Image 1 (tube, rainbow, N blue to C red):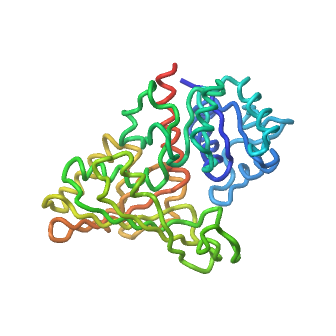
Image 2 (cartoon, rainbow, N blue to C red):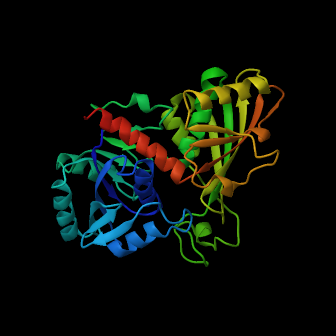
Image 3 (cartoon, rainbow, N blue to C red):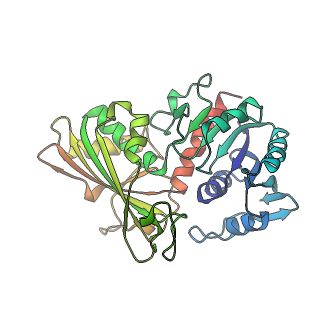
Length: 349
């Protein structure tokens, strides 16, 4: 199973999906045929070859006219501003000639009507979005509800969000075996690319403040993302976020009121069981190192959706559970996005 893939939008997530595809398999887990962004191809190559968080990849990156060449594998590059109508037509024509099975939209700005139009025009068979796009057909978190994918009904698909992928496995386990009455999720999230080094304009003014000098409180949709994949939790979740000037790895501080009495050993064994079986490679239980706590930077480049800090797992009065988990919100998320792509392509070939 290889599949023909295109990626539109080469910001942090788009580049990370591309990078991870070639990290998982030397010739690429999937056949990426096209890349589209507003940047010149030389800048895309530069950012892939010299990543400030992950360093240089273990494969070569070169340019040949309108192709990016990764480890000898040529990928058609289309530099385009999709907002310019005359350019958009040329871009769509080029994509159509590549016979794409799936198009990854990692722009975060597309509207569902435009993506459906791509399928109508036979540009691609399916579209995968790297956020919860309004009006999409399904939001899938691998390991939680990916088995609900229906190729006859689901054409515009969301791979949820990085925080949604991190919390949903925890929520699934606890809801399935104990029950959740209410959960409060607080994320400590690294600054994102739309924030500023110095104070400046932002449509959300608090996110326009200098990232290096403050912890910035802001909203997050992890509660909504989780409810999309575990509907029985709708109305039982609340979430909030703090943006901080750290590298890549996010932390979640979660407080859960359980539906029935439990004990800490039972919960520990539940998490360990899933980490070793059904959610192997997705959930990881971390016990520190030589009796010492790890810190967030230790988890850069880890492929897990959720890493439970087992030494910080606490239960009070048999029903009030405290969880601390970490996750690489780029690489971990992109590993799951590729897993979802595998699920979709498996029904095509």
